Image 1 (cartoon, rainbow, N blue to C red):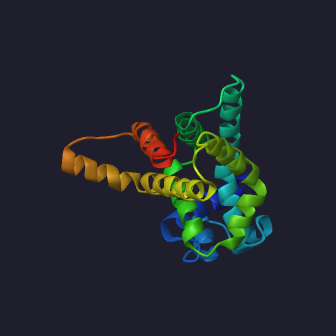
Image 2: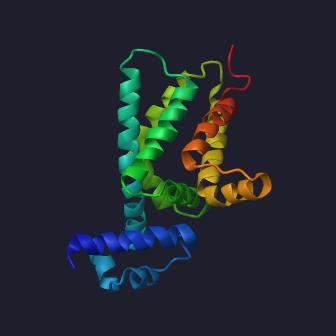
Length: 211
C-alpha cells in the first residue's frame, strides 16, 4: 500500500467515525482498525490525534474556501455590492457544491463543523482561524456591508443564528427529509433544500435591518 493510499484510508475512516461518534469518543485504535492500518501509521503521517482531526477538516475547508473565493471574485468583478441573497447563494450552492465535486459529503462536513463548536476542541478552532480566517472575515465583511443598518452586536448574533440553522439543517438533512416524506408525502433533494434555505436565512439576517 502506498503512502498516499494509507493517508487516504486513515482520513476516510477518521472522517466517518468522528462524524458518527464525535472526536472525544473516537479512539485512534478504532480509526486504525477501520482503516486497516497500524497505530504507527497514524503517528508517522499525522503525529497526533489533534493533527489528524485538523487534516480531516483541511480536506473539506480547502476546496470549500477556494471555490467560495472564486465565486466572490466573479461576483465582485461586476463592480456591484453583493446582496445578502447573492452571498448566501455563493456560500450554499458554490461553496458546498464544491465539496460534492471533491467527493466530500456536505452533510458530514456540517456534522463535523457542529461538533467542532459543541465539543471541547480549542485546537481545531485555532487551526481553522489561523488557516481559513481570511476567508471567513472576507465573507462576513461582505455580509455586514450588505446589512449597513444592523449594529455589530446584532450582526454577530444573527450571523451565528444563520450558521447554526445551516449546520442543523444540513447535518440532519436525511432525518428531516424522512419526516417530510412521512408527514407530507413529499421529497426534497439537497439542492432544492438549499434553494429554500437561501430566503429563510436571508430573512433571519435582514429582519428590521434595512432602513
